[in-house]
Image (cartoon, rainbow, N blue to C red; front, side):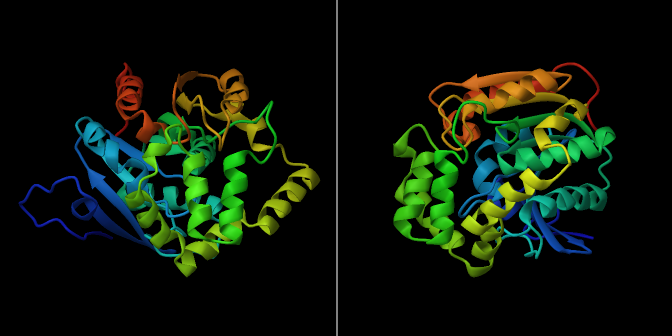
Length: 301
């Protein structure tokens, strides 16, 4: 069952966080998402990090995409908007995409994923090839070739997760962008309030505590399963990879392996841009991605 939390029947809502907010009841609790526009279905999957939400990642570009698509901005469990989860945020995210599509009766969609949302979207697309027509990822996949692991931005994220101070939050936010002037007091305050919520912080520590990072590295070394980057040849959706040239969270060399191994893939790199291409290069991002999604072929339904 879906519930429109803000829309009065017969009215035309403005594209604000409040007017677009919806609820979907699932077996795992309430999923919340934002909905706007008419046309083929397009699902947005947000990234991770302190104080993140789907709206904060993609609310600024929603107007442009809602002119052409029926847009759904999913709020992943564990980030303070949808109901919390005891699962690690990654598998919880993949399950949330399945629950959203099944609950809304969406057979096939296009997906745009940022960072963690790109990893979730990649896994979902590989596991459900008939359900994803076109896939756009902002970072969110690949293998770092030249840089150290973890990268600077991830190390700062771990530092904040271990010891959540305002100063550490600011340091992490500045690693996310090319232009430090984008880290405004308003951004800091809205991120701080949500990032320090106890349930949200607990979820973040499942991914970014030192113990969690150590366990992930050890598990990767011990498993016989292929790493995620070695399965990219199974991604059948037409794919667009976009990246910020100056990304200090997921450096741009991470695009090299996906560029070679995904069967039908394009790559676009934005200059003067960090990890948030959809925010820092908003107009160029909208133009590039809309062109890709609308170019030829049958739309999703």
